[in-house]
Image (cartoon, rainbow, N blue to C red; front, side):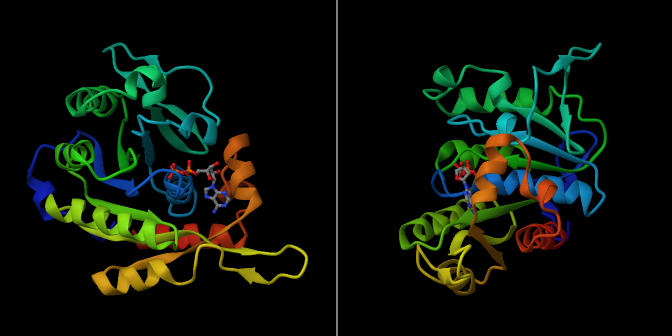
Length: 260
Ligand code: ADP
């Protein structure tokens, strides 16, 4: 909550929502949605904030599965969508609004129209923070989202690999271009700890995101290892910060929530 964009304070914000934080990545499959989910639940449970989670990943909306959202949002009297609450977080997914096969070919303006509906057309009530799971990538669509939704800050998720880090740098540039403060880089899939001998293997290289963050003068938010329970929790709809709140991993997510 510290890093607020001064430009957003005076401009048109969504009524009732104090801050909007975007979770972004340069490419898909690095754990952006996993981060968005565990961050949102940590902000609600650990930081006791009123939290919303918007799944804006048109290319593969995964929040309904990860947060075990059942059914479709109902409409309020004034025809606004009522978010589905799960683990204390009010959730809305682009997946409940459109057919994924259709949305995948959408160009920027269509995506923006859908997102306008998913933000302003939703009965969010009062929120301290809305977490947005962005579409992967750093193109025009992502830039328009950052601009139009007047983000308070952006968090970048990357794996330690060179190629992923290159994409992460693009993410940083994207947010800078539209004056969105960058909250930091979180490294996902940092290592794998052998459950038998406890030795850590740095499958995608070691320390890559930390180094990139330092080089770019950004906060390094922490390392999340490759962990079977993160994957199974996603598939079963129980985020690891709920199933294993005392684990080291949940601790890292909790610290990220406190830092942002
Ligand atoms: P993105 O949103 O960047 O496309 P996801 O968060 O959907 O990525 O993650 C892609 C897949 O990898 C999911 O099945 C997820 O459960 C799994 N995954 C993500 N992070 C981890 C991790 N640290 N350990 C194990 N599996 C992970």
